[in-house]
Length: 299
Ligand SMILES: [Zn+2]
Image 1 (cartoon, rainbow, N blue to C red):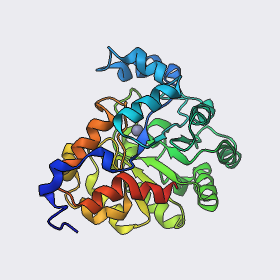
Image 2: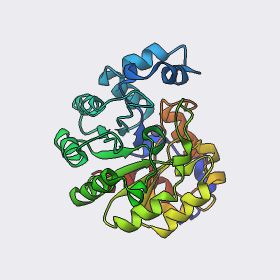
Image 3: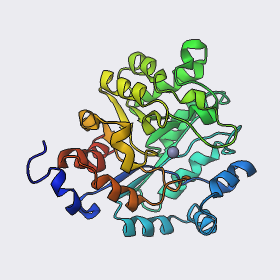
Image 4: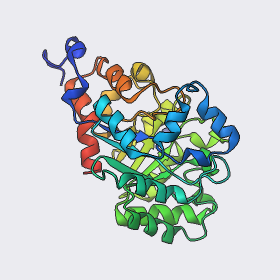
């Protein structure tokens, strides 16, 4: 896999332009709905361009310009209702669909259903499909449940997994901590996905963030045990990726490139790609993560 031409020695020559990159996980969301303290956390460290970021959430043309500049072909726009913690309501799904309509090939809308507060989760998932939502996002620390809480009576969650499995809608689950006020990071342990992968074997399940920064051992175990679970690399500083996952190449068929931009601590989509391309990894792993796997999952 790492021949002379594509071994670590060639890393410096790699260019983002050589790949048709899908950034599987960016945050284009109705930020104006954020609760005041959450908004403050979001603003921290990007005070000078925060007004621009708010405008970006209103205007897909601004995002497409940034994608062109950064050499990003497609982005997955993560949205999910989190009425109690973040402030987003169900209309976040309509927001994502409307935003993506500006350039549907390149802007992939993700949506969600809050299993704790939604009274009719099956209808809600059907509505997402009608809107053209490409991935259903669950955020346990922001929605207040564990990803396997259907084993303890949260029936709405089993219904969501079952209909997504039947209809082929991939489910993306946040793992790892969250720094936003009110977030319950105890729900970020990837071990809970063991139950989900066993009980819903045909579900296309994606683990976001690899449990960072606390649960990487659990994350790696789940990914090795369940080869149909994908790993979204967003939120992990790319320069430290091989410290987090020293055996990353063993997950080649499961890797999905993502940045979490413009969340706290993420400088830019292109900067992250460049850091990733500088890692001592073979060409086939790079291409699988940046390009091929996302095109298999979301053609
Ligand atoms: Zn995220």
